[in-house]
Length: 438
Image 1 (cartoon, rainbow, N blue to C red):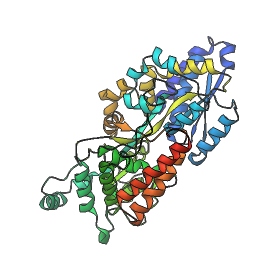
Image 2 (cartoon, rainbow, N blue to C red):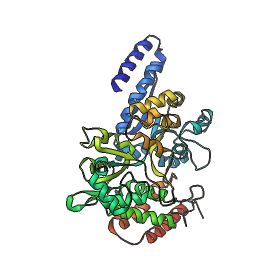
Image 3 (cartoon, rainbow, N blue to C red):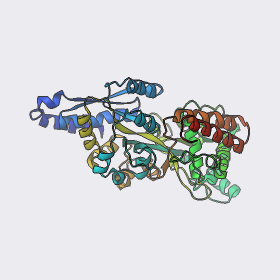
Image 4 (cartoon, rainbow, N blue to C red):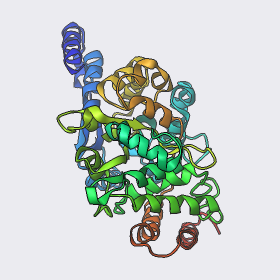
């Protein structure tokens, strides 16, 4: 596909070379994003836009640990270094309330993007405040937490026989969280250096919280009321207590030293024959179907986060929307670019290059769902995602949740009810501090 794209791009360039005006060639746009493979795919995509329009678009990147700091330093200085940013979903409250993002509500409504993009991506990548009908980003890089697993372990006749004898049902992709737990227990064999499951536990940013959200949302729980900031009886609900207990139990089936695990470690759990199943963002699954990076590529399968005990099926949202920066000197040109970006043919090409489109039409197409071993699970997930708080104080809320749940999950400190009651008190105090509630 890359060679085909390059050849096509070269052909387009030859055709347009004579017809592109000097004025168009002088125009440039800069998109800021984190340094990872999707940013490289985006650069390939925008090269097509340059060939069509004559407008040069550069995707400038910085390492993930520096991304938020560098972006908001530029925003707060009202700098014009970037015209657009592919920003984390949690930024939308802080960036919109501070005036850093251009209001895209009219653009959103004009192009009927509530229908064009998967509904959940509109709700969490684009809209702020919740249920306000105000939009600040265009869903760009869809992502969510899913699962990979060792098909060869699951399909071993001896394992299948032993599993059914112990649990009374056939070994296969887990149909709910109970089966996920059973399979993790079944394959957990420390004496053989084989373990049941790999989950997120790193508490330095949002990894652990995203992992816990996978349980909370599928157990029918919520983090709070995003419209009223009410958290009492919601974050510490009975469903959430059970979800946190379930996540802690999964931790007991992880490989040794798994108390600071994120996407690198969770992929290694599959590539290094450590675990039967592994949680990770879909954005990191391409490495698992590449035999150069995963010797078990042919034996690796994928599935969406399973439903909880009452049939609720959701997953923690990752990914980002693309926003126009208020201090850009090229806002009109940036809007023209967004009009090109949202086209069906552009979104299709974005998916072909390796980007995770949020276009409902592309996601629903058999062509997309059959393109990789994980695309069908991705499609299923992107219509069932939920996200963390997007309020400007989200970073404090995130730190508080990490501080409460990490000692419980990895250190066996307190009970799930005590942890969540304390977290409710923390969040209430934070919302009072910022005058969200009285």
